[in-house]
Length: 77
Image (cartoon, rainbow, N blue to C red):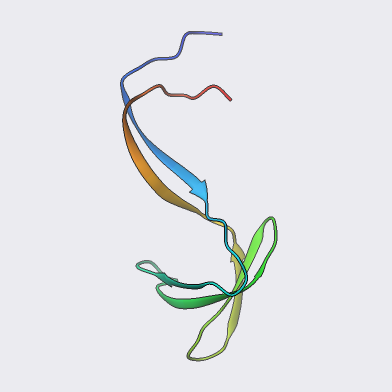
């Protein structure tokens, strides 16, 4: 295996640990707005709009946690 390069700027993402009952606000994008988490599985999250009470189930997604400087990339897993 080739030696990893060093010195890259790397953005770290992690799946958010949604829990039923959480009230969240999505700041931007097509899902912008307030939501309540009503169901969670390994692959999906179901949200309810507090205004219309409509429910939507979407794939779980990832959030930017931090930006690291001088991080090796690719990471060894």
